[in-house]
Length: 202
Image (cartoon, rainbow, N blue to C red; front, side, top):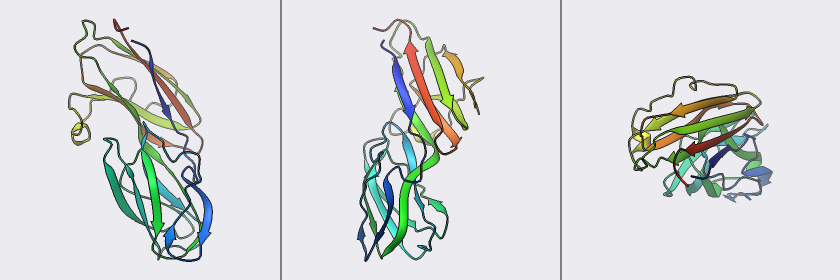
């Protein structure tokens, strides 16, 4: 099988929207470079040097399963706040009051991507190479559950690639269903590129 490449979108405070203000309630302009960050699944962050704590921001987009979801995030007060719903793309962000210099970014943690294992193949070996840059901490895990239940079960960390912070290579030899790259934490600008190749597939 051709290699599958999963790329972690580097975290920034303005992945989704650059710093902006509004004179009244309404939508923000999504003028950042990563409005669609699939196959990453990430939390949304709001950052400001000013007090926007009284403003609620309604974020709407799609999740890892292609389902449209929304959440309300209270605004930041001279800091960065994060939501609790993972998105793969953002469709809109609407504030319920005037906004004073807020940017919208992506969280330091999340899923870099998923790989659907071909468990019908005669050879089950899967090679995984991960190349990182900057400060980042990640796991390689797998699950026997299918979508949409993959996020409701305990994952099985692969030995040697749990809490990893450097370039790594691993081999998954038993059949499974999905393989994941989880990023536990990452600094601004940190990168990760994972390449997966399953033996015996064209």
